[in-house]
Length: 226
Length: 303
Image (tube, rainbow over all chains, first blue to last red; front, side):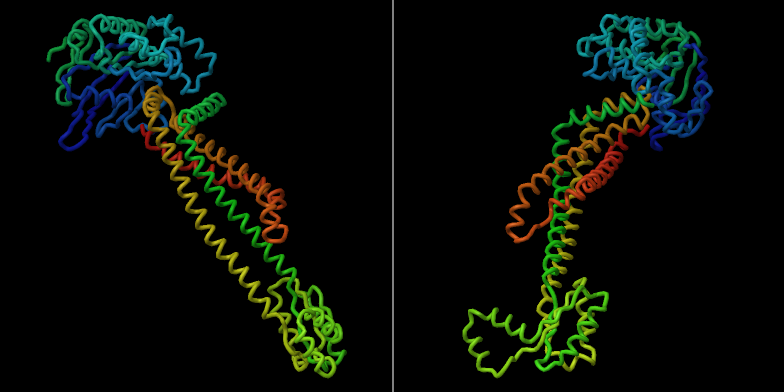
């Protein structure tokens, strides 16, 4: 479960990222965080992955209070939260296989485990026949699938997707969303941060709407209302 | 643990190859710094050798009055020989001193003529004193100038040698001081170069570092390859320095020995101390280089 209790993030006195946000996300939920630019979506994502610390309030992920997480604990947290970005963040000089295995290598997984798990994950995202290709040889949608595979390789409890379809056309957007729904169906909590109206409306899942750093609506089968 | 250590090790190697040119520049600066240390050490060896060489040839001669009784001379010799500071004391009789003087003045007929005009032997006996250490000469001279022997002493030759010994010792001190300052400057610039080399290396890999952090790499996993890269650069510099010093000794020592007219002893010194020197130099430069790499990497691994 993800719990936020009265969380605020202030960058400067005039620049407020989040303002007294409280919410609960149950295990296995698929939640969309929506809002216009500057609403606080990315701030929320950064707080969840401990890239920033809240100015006030408390954040708990799976019973782990990460509000004042120690730097040495951050890597462990990030292995439990798979993160997907709009700009992919793939290593251009590594193949698809290497980009995914990289995530396991840095956490000290043995080579035999890597050789076993990476093909499985690539099969889930439909890239099992493209493991020797480089990112430049893939379409935008395929690159985002590699990112999803990399995020899944640690078998995370939570998948945090920050604008995952921002750089994709409609067809690829649909593919990626289908993949996220499939991953959610396996039991992984998915937190989708987006301002894509069509995507949110098509999902018919829980929607939390942010405006000026505050939650203005939270509906179980919501729509993009802004 | 072993897997991580191996991956850090291989990553450090790939860092070195990816940043070959800037790494090479750092290795050159390190090598210059280490060479300057070795030049200082070699100069020190040379000066020590020169001091020993001169000291070996220096003794002090106490000239006695021509009419000094043999008993006084024997007593003075016995007294000095009994002192721990004395290596040996030897009496040259007045007749032997005259023979030696004539031998030295062979080419100077005027001196020989003047000597022939004098009635008898104008020279007195001499007491040649060799100290164990050059700094003991003042003490030994004071010892021999006690009231028992002072009325018979004409003069001593110590003043002639004292200036030469003291000049060499002063020169050695100044050179050590100047050399240390020079080494400190080279080491400083070497470290600055290493710091920048590592920073450039980190900057070129900042995207990779960001992704490593994103997927859960520990700070140590990100940092240690850069620290090891600094150690590799120090190792290369140490090897280059050892090669340069080795070649310098092989080709330079015969020239130096001919120039100074003595065995300068660099080869024997490096054969005795070379391994320890290389290890000490590598250890120092690797520790410093690793430390600056640690600092340089710190900026990119925050959260």
